[in-house]
Length: 48
Image (cartoon, rainbow, N blue to C red):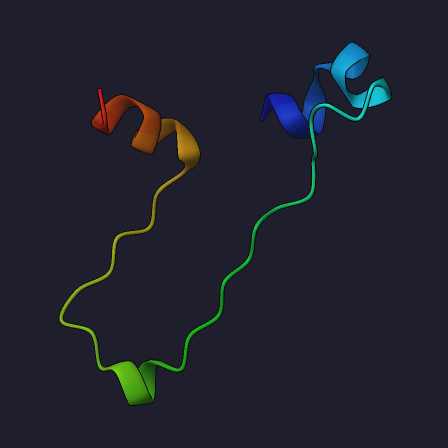
């Protein structure tokens, strides 16, 4: 959320990018058993 709503000084310096990362997959080809949908904040907490 800070990328889209805050961190104005960092946006002006082009240090923070508010554009989302989007990945697409053909689920018919992959046929996954499960998927995890998570934000980067969850991954930061999970990896520690």
